[in-house]
Image 1 (cartoon, one colour):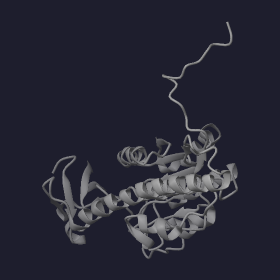
Image 2 (cartoon, rainbow, N blue to C red; image 1 turned 120 degrees about the vertical axis):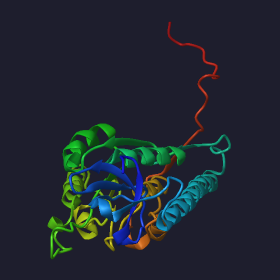
Image 3 (cartoon, one colour; image 1 turned 180 degrees about the vertical axis):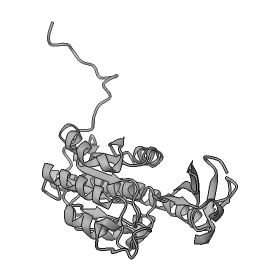
Image 4 (cartoon, rainbow, N blue to C red; image 1 turned 180 degrees about the horizontal axis):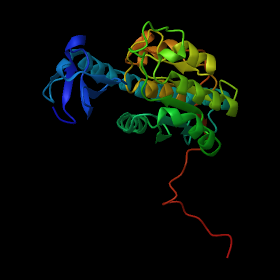
Length: 299
């Protein structure tokens, strides 16, 4: 068994495909290819799988991810058309004949995993969501937000990475942050963000990873969080939530049912509270400066 090999766990019925990230004396460090899970496993519990072969759960997640992408792209187009129609109705069409430009909400994305961050930034780009991403260890996210928020001034903050209920803490108490790998770090980061901006609609916070303490994250000030059912969430679920908020009009609240429907993990993986969107439109349509004819006015 080598670094980069794809494996499944026999003890879990081979339900999730992992990639080998590291080798230890008596265990192997594995990371979900599609789910935000980093774990140790005994070498004799792992079965290698060919690269084209994926677990059924991973296949279903990829199918749903593509469906979610299609829905979000459709939502973005419908949002633009609806906003244009509203302007035409209120302004009599005099300002909208020459078009308009989109101003979606800006995302600051902190991720505790470099590969998931890369996938997330690619999806933001596909959805035309303005986003700045940083690979940050979960324990350093609070300090990083303290420095970045005044500079980036985002509309939406995503705080994610790796988390999980600790198996070694037996019997574990799901009410206690001590039972989770990184939920306490996510709570600290949320608190810093809320000190920067207390208004839940002015700064939308999407937080959590696999099996995160959903209630604690919401109580700390997150608008959307994982995981109500303490399940594994898909690596891109936080991106779908942030993108939905980015392209929902500031005149409207983000449809929570749509948000949950757009995620791969569903209502057991992601939840949240009523929140206004961040999307605006501007007039007139931006011009192509490379072809614009201008007479200089200053010598």
